[in-house]
Amino acid sequence: VGENMDAVKASPFIQGFVKKGLEVVFMTDPIDEYMMTVVKKYHDFNFVCITNNTLDLSEFEDEKQETPKCDKLIEFFKTTLKDKIKDVVVSKRLVESPCVLITDSWGWSANMERIMKSQVLGDNQMASFMVSSKTLEINVDHPIMKEINNRVEKNIEKNNNDSLEDIATLLYQGALLASGFILDKP
Image 1 (tube, one colour):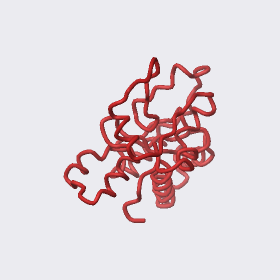
Image 2 (cartoon, rainbow, N blue to C red; image 1 turned 180 degrees about the horizontal axis):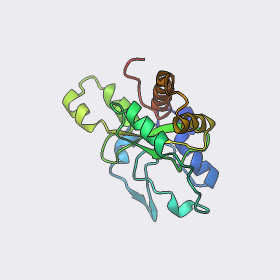
Image 3 (tube, rainbow, N blue to C red; image 1 turned 135 degrees about the horizontal axis):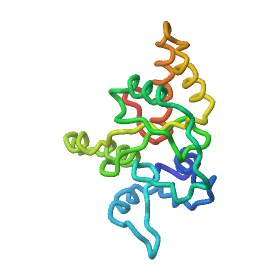
Image 4 (cartoon, rainbow, N blue to C red; image 1 turned 120 degrees about the horizontal axis):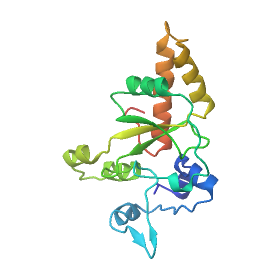
């Protein structure tokens, strides 16, 4: 679900689905966001939101791929972005993008957050409750992530860690925009 057809077609969330030849239903009307909270199935097909943390692509994996060692990379992002994200996980859905932000299944999606923030009589107390905590999903095969991982593993930026933290913040902000969220201070 997104703001318009161009936005949903360019979404980084669909990269893995396109690569695997799986179908994705694009929805661009604001009412679609409300409708999908109630409509969970169509005939024998279950609807699954591809932007939240409940997505399981394991049945569509060709073979088990070994994930490169990235414990220090994950810990680096968790530490650097600790006030902005809940967790960091390795992505199975990203192909070309370095990272995205996924939401909890119980909270609002990025599109629903955008819709609710635009409401004239929006309830700020309800909004703060329903805004979902975000998980940074990283593509460890992306060249940017490989380079950051290399620097973190070898502690190259030991004396100048600020530049790596700036890059992490920039990646987070890019992931906010790519995932459909609005920057707090654009």
